[in-house]
Every structure is written in structure tokens, then in C-alpha cells.
Amino acid sequence: MEPVHRPVLVDEVLALLEPRTSHPVLVDATLGEGGHSACFLQAHPGLRVIGVDVDGVMMARARERLAGFGDRVHYQPGWFDLFFEGSDESFDLILIDLGISMYHLSLAERGFSFRADESLDMRLDADGETTAADIVNDMSEVELANLIYEFGEERYSRRIAARIVSDRADSRITTTKQLADTVWRS
Image (tube, rainbow, N blue to C red; front, side, top):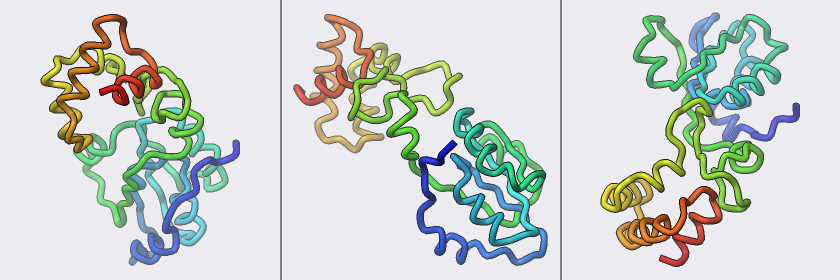
């Protein structure tokens, strides 16, 4: 497995999250492919990492990348908010790298990018129930407009939502290209 994602600002992150104990515990709450964790594990031989990620494919890629660190890495599948909510363990360091990886944009084929015509999925958790296609095809026009405005900060959210509802009346919107074309026409 060749990692797709290169961690960003490694030197800065290592400097800002310098451990203050000899056997610290780092929670990498967005483990991804384990790039940041690998850097921490290499830089601090006494460090232990708890890697949290909801994406099973990413977790498998991280396990392969971090295999050489043995039992210094513990893998915790799931969303980081639920992990912290249910944990009574104390941690020395917490890293949360909010953003989407190049794997998801380039290789996952889950519809995170509009560069290729892919299934309109957009789930990080492939076992999750609701896909982007479900949202686009099942939400009311008002709900869609509010969602697009609130999370996309799109000033034309009402126009886009109206076009989506109009286009889906003819046929279900199931691919990224269909959605992109609908948004473009709006």
C-alpha cells in the first residue's frame, strides 16, 4: 500500500504538541492513513497512539502504515466525538486534522469530488445509512435550501434547491455529474 495522503504542517504540529511526559498518550482523532501518527511515533519512542477513524478503509490503510510500531498503536473505529464522550481515559495530547484526504478525493469512488462521475454517496462511514443521493432526492426543497445555505454558505441555495427538486421529478439524481449539472444549470 502506498499512502496517498501526506500529512501537512508536520514540523509545526510536532513542535506544538511536544509531549511533556516520558510515556505520553496521543489521541489522533482523525487517524486517516496514519501520517501524523507515524511522525509522532518516530519522534517520540515512549509515545502511545490511540487512532480514531470512522472509515474502515482508512483504518486498514493506517494499520498497514503503522504496523512497525506494534502495540504502541491502538485502533478505535468510530466518530471522534463519540469516542471522547464515552472515554474515561486521560490523554496527554489530542490531534484533530479536520479536512478530507486525497484518498477520498481521488481514489475512494464515493463521490467526494466532482472530477469524475461517481455514485452520489459521500459517506465516510460506508456502513452509514444515509447517502448524499438520499438527501438530494428525499429532502424537501426548504430543507435542501437550508442545508446548502448553512453548511455550504451558498447565497443561491434557494435557487439550487428549486432546481434539484425540479430535476429529480424527472429522475432520481444518483451521480456526482448529475448533481453538478443540476447546480450549474441553477
